[in-house]
Length: 491
Image (cartoon, rainbow, N blue to C red; front, top):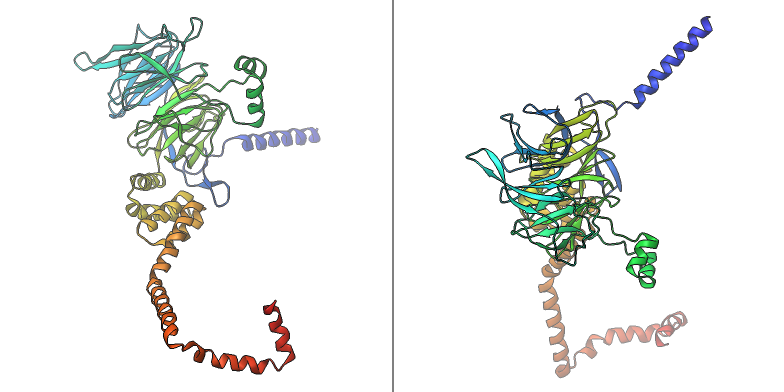
């Protein structure tokens, strides 16, 4: 009997032990995740201080319960807009006043994408109605009214009668050109002008330039490649716009994001990223945020695609700061992060606030990418005091020294940052400085030699200069070992 009791107690203790191991670790500050950055020097992800901490989780907004949140965005006044497909409307919510406005009731069918343009108009992608809409705020009525509609174009070679037109996301650039992400469309985003006229596709993905793909393209036509080898580019899944009006896209099974210029060419892209990003957003410092639909991790990138932070993750125990099925991410003017989670038991809005560490990095980045390298020096140094493995800080310090003509100090910083291009430029500047410093001496010596050669033509004094050398040579020739040594020079 005692043995049975002991065995049962051991089983209970073992179960408790393994349960404790499987639970997410909660740190002393209540954050249930670690934060990482990528180190070029060690070629791996390294731990760093918390960049963002979870502030709150909300299941309703001003009395409106979230039922099927599909997307989120924020305007310049920090109003939050959430597309709720089940409620067939967009919810505008002000966090400070707790006021809400319902948009599109009786019009929208299944809104899945929402965006606020530079013109302060609201753009909605409605996959249920197979259309996208432009809404304009009417302050007199305190509501939004439809001012444009974007539908499947007719009479264009880009669309056949049986081609689908199912908008799932929408963004606009600085010229208020509308880009609509269509579900499953491999050609890219449908582009519409201000008059809601279709003007073509933009941002389509290309097939990888592998050897096998090149052979197949040479031997088979497009229909055969698609049918036999499934050689079809991945469709664009989501899009965003940066402060310069450049469009960013993310696609399933393609890592991270890519940024396109106005010529529809890749301007830059992330150095790494998840292959299942659900959404992306460009913050106030032009840093890029993505969120993984499967892993639940949030990644923040620099404007050039370097990894700043990776944090949060999958929620298995209903913990604030983690996600079950994230659908959208947005960032306000204060760098607060908003994420909508759409799981059966977790239809919520979570808010994260930046730490002092993140704010210092954002300050340095803002100055650095504004070309104010000297002003960014002190914030970058402060970042390094907090985390000596933060490579972007070493690069920023190197660029600041370079701008101040301190090329040797710049070389040292570039070494820590593993920035070969920056080191090479600083090295050549150091070399040029040395050449300039010794330039006067080189000129004097060269001119002196030329004058001596000219004078020797008239005075013939060289024979007197080399006379001692000839005498020594004649004397040494008496010795056999000297003859053997100089024999090689004759040959």
